[in-house]
Image (cartoon, rainbow, N blue to C red; front, top):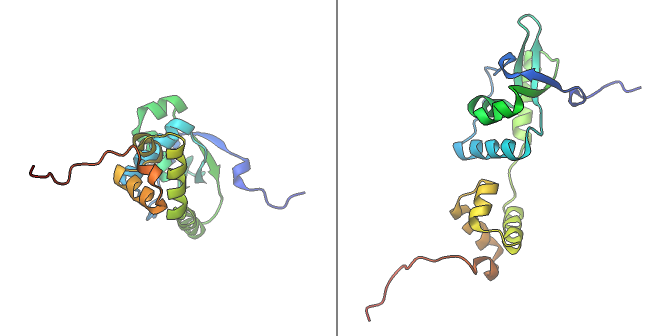
Length: 172
């Protein structure tokens, strides 16, 4: 018999009105990443639960991790309606100090993207025939970022359909 069962094995379907933010999360997400999170939830659904602590005294769930996924539900009517106003919640039962530490661990564990791997992904998508506009829309990048990643790979084929501006004109 297992001594410990991870909370993810007991996901609850909780009305968003019974969920609230904590007062200590230092994590902020820039607007482009929030738009990408919205797009991710719109395209893929909620693939990860919101991690919460359950307050029995007022029958509310306080977010430990997942504030921005929660925010998407509140901000975007299409997501709220599609999900019926419910969020998947994984509950942890820990004192406030451990919940604060858990919030920070969750935030820091997300890491960053390796530039070389990202440029390889862009190269593969270009080779599959995906346009810069498609890549920008689906990966949440701007055109300049895609250009920089293409430059890292150094592959001339990645630029074959790129439109260049006229930097100067000749006096003929």
